[in-house]
Image (cartoon, rainbow, N blue to C red; front, side, top):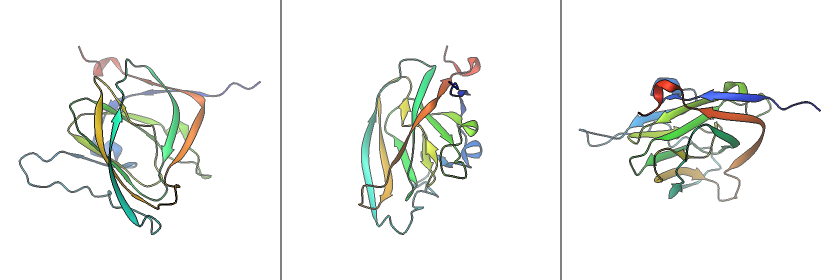
Length: 170
C-alpha cells in the first residue's frame, strides 16, 4: 500500500502582498468613510444573484490543526468580514491543471480581526477557522441559484497547520 503524502503548513502573518495570488486583503476602514473590496464582485455570468449572510465559526482549541477538507467557489469570489475580535485562519492553495487542489502550494495565514479576506473565484481554501474565541463573519458572494456554488474536496493527504514559535501569543 502506498502511503498518502503528508504536508505541514507553517502559518504566517496575513498581508495583502502575500495573499495576492489567492484574492484580496483589506483592513477595516479607520479614519476614512469607505474601503472598497476590489475582487468582491468578480462573478461569472451564471452568478446572477448576490448573497449576503452571517456565518459562525467555532473556536479552535489549539494548533496544530489537521485540515481534512478544502472548498472553492467556481462562479464567484467569496468575501469574509469578521464581526468580532478573534484572529482567524486563511488557508489556501492553487489548483492543478485538472482543477484539483495543488497541495504542495498550500499556504496558511493568520488574519487579524481588522482584516477582510476575499477569496478569488476558484481558489481552494480551508473552511473558516477562528483562533482565540468564537466569532461570526458577514459573508458575501454571487450565486447561481442552481445549488452548484460550492465545491468540496476531501483530503486524502495528511495536512497539518502549525503555529511557528515566533507567532505564538505569550
